[in-house]
Length: 228
View 1 (spheres, rainbow, N blue to C red):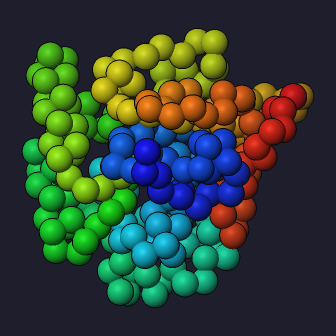
View 2: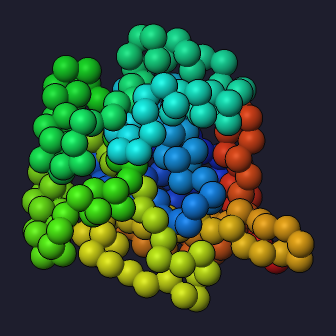
């Protein structure tokens, strides 16, 4: 199986060498768990490895995302050059429609040789559908299209609960090739960010829940350590 290095510290170790190439992974978590930062660094590290990236933001504007990520990752000193060269692009579609998003991704793959894509978030797309059945059918068609394209995709997803034992799963969890869950675990009077690779089709992986931190020079996942 061909893999790509995520470049996120500790994650490739947990994945047994990296993500399966051209697969589609959900990054799921409640607000404040670091989903946007996590997926953005996936793109940033890809550019460092010669793989152009596209961040499709369905909530924040391009300017807001650039400001937020620049502030979060102040140690990414080459980030502005990546934006300027268009090796890393952020775009906000005018409509919350999967058909438009798919067309945008196709165009970027063709025009800018994009290899890594982030869609933030599936939850926003879901809200644009009045009927659940229509959403499910459209989502299946969307991922069928993505599987014909030469790109690896991460899609953020709002978790049904901040507590692991109360999580429920929906259609996105079943159609995606992988699921990475992010948590804000209570530990006394503070919270600890934690991560688990819940599912990754076609490859073995660590099943431990481990702590991680979002630092100015990148996310640090403490593979092999316990949350408590």
